[in-house]
Length: 157
Image (cartoon, rainbow, N blue to C red):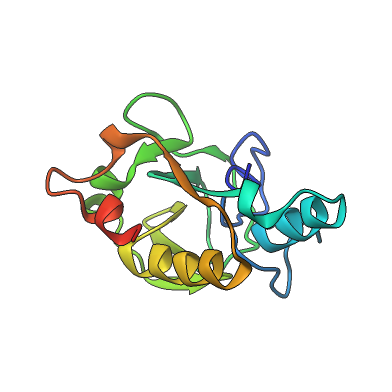
């Protein structure tokens, strides 16, 4: 799976993008990113054509965060529509618009909440990666997290 690498199940952080495409300076766990996962699976002999890149149509977030960049401490999961620490892209794009990108995933700090999620632009980057790697395709979770006009699914071309 190439999402849910980080989230508010680590209630005090550090904040980190839940679906980083690559590593970045300060990543909490060195190999917790999509490109490392794909490389490991290919190294085990699994053909690239049989591997899929997963895209989350939701974000993961923390509250009690004071720094805008990834790597901050938190006091717990941010409030979500359905459960703590998670919310749909269609909600987050308005509630907490992306202010930065790290390792191919967008992030934003709104008040004391910090969220990471994919946007059409970050998905386009991930589709380029998928094509360069010769992967078999992509999948997503979960369609109801997209906007009514399908911003995210349209980016998965």
